[in-house]
Structure formats: structure tokens, C-alpha cells
Amino acid sequence: MKLTAVMALSLGLLMVGVGGLAQPAWAQAESPAADRTGHGDFGIGFGPLLSTESGSIMGMEFYADYFLTNELSVGPLLQIGFDSGYDQEGGSVQLKYTFDLTENGRVHPNLQGGLGIIHASDGDNQTDFLLPLGGGIDVEVAKRLFLNTTFLLNITGLNNETYVSWFFGFRVDI
Image (tube, rainbow, N blue to C red; front, top):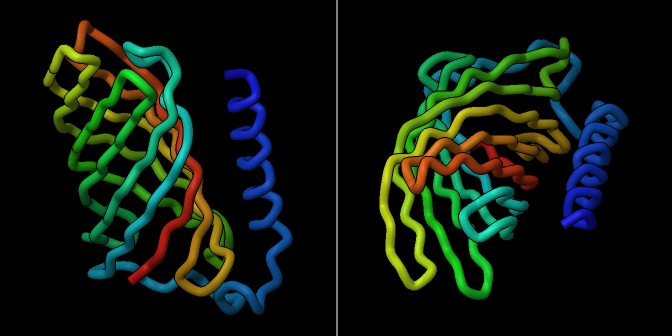
């Protein structure tokens, strides 16, 4: 587990460094970010799910967003975790608020929250509610391509369990 946390932290620092060092030719022109209203994106990430019923397990996330305004988006989030004798799947609808911090629009932190269901199985099937809350940072590395990290506190009804997911991946604007 310690090695996974160190690798995840190193990847996160690398992503921030790449975002800070990226040449303007890689990303958008040096102008304010384009309006995202009416556009969508999708992404995928990999990382640990910490403190699940089975301990720490590896996981994946798949998501899509539709921008209602330049900052506010809504869309599905699927979190999947697995190890040799345990698996869990959580699906939710997320509401996300995205900030534009830099003048050229390459760095986009976000806050998000959602509501959904989670199913876990270790030979005994359980299904209950899922409330993922958290945020992340997207760094544009090419036009419409972002590296990102997402950190979520997942509150569930499975034995009153709360676990953390920390994903690293990419996002593509469409």
C-alpha cells in the first residue's frame, strides 16, 4: 500500500509539473478559455480505492460531463474496484463546478458531488446508496486533451462504510 501511495503522489506532482511547463504551442493560445456551455467531455482514470470493506484495492473510473454553463456540468460516474476475492461497482450522477484559474485556461480545478448506488460482492452481494464528494484538477497538455487527478470521499450505506478513491487519468473534450 505504501508503494501505491508514493506512486500516486509522484504521478500527481508530475501532472502539475507538466501543466506548468507545457509550451503554449501544446495548449490553447494565450487567451481566456473558450466557453464550454453545451459541450461535453469524457474521461477514464486508474488508482486506489482506500479503506473499502476489503481494505485497499485497485480501481478505475469512467465518466462523462455535459456543460450546462461554462462552469457547471452534470454527468454519470462509474467507479469499479477489484481484487482477487472482492469487487465493487458504484454508479452515480455527478454535479461538477469547474474553475478557470489561469488566464490561458490550461488548469481547471473542480468540485463535485453526486448521488447513486453501489454494489459489492465478496461471495455475499450487497447493494446500497453511494454519495461521492470531492474534486480534482485537470491540466491541458494538448488541444482538448487533459491529464487529471480526482479525489473522492465515498459515503455508502454498506455497513456505514466510507472509503476514498484517488484516480489519475485523462479527459477528452468533445
